[in-house]
Image 1 (spheres, one colour):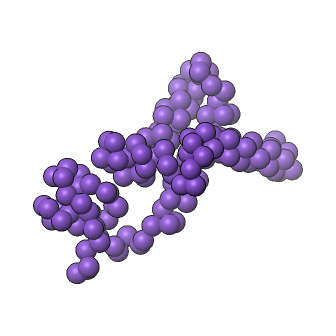
Image 2 (spheres, rainbow, N blue to C red):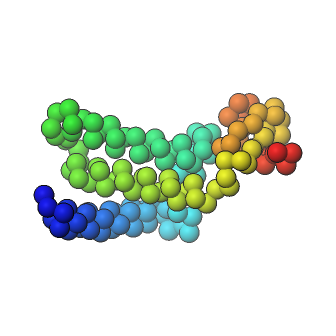
Length: 137
């Protein structure tokens, strides 16, 4: 593939990825203005961070790509669409991270004093406490 052919391929794939991101985003957010609604809802349900949920969704596409590498085919969805989905999850994770405070921010549980750099709503250690920014750091 020449550099020109690659450039044409890349632009076509990025346009397809943006189309997928827009369509699936509308479906997954159920019309909400919160782009991360489905991740946030599941994160609360499972007591994980939204970023962890995004990574889990991303990982299933990596598993499919690994299957393609090992066996030369996947049965459920076109491999190019799996790659597009994986790239879109990376984009979503990057956007989510860009909206968060720096890693210097420490969150602490009001109940058990567990601390972390991850912005959990409920403490992953005691599963009861509310996480707040530790003002003493």
